[in-house]
Image (cartoon, rainbow, N blue to C red; front, side, top):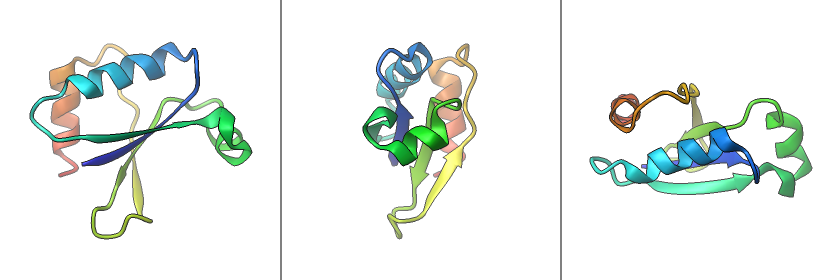
Length: 87
């Protein structure tokens, strides 16, 4: 599963989500982190929304689906169940 996480340095919500994603053992996750401060268009789109998580369509890498942002209180197992829905 290829996921893209839009984030920025110092974002504690982003860091928390990234840490939980790396702890998931049931799904092989290829996590790409995009720092919104490196591209103005990303910053304009996501500056008030981060962390923003997308799943990339394996058959068409140009096609991405946004995954609703989980609560910071979401556990690793709950996040796993959320991601399982997108497989």
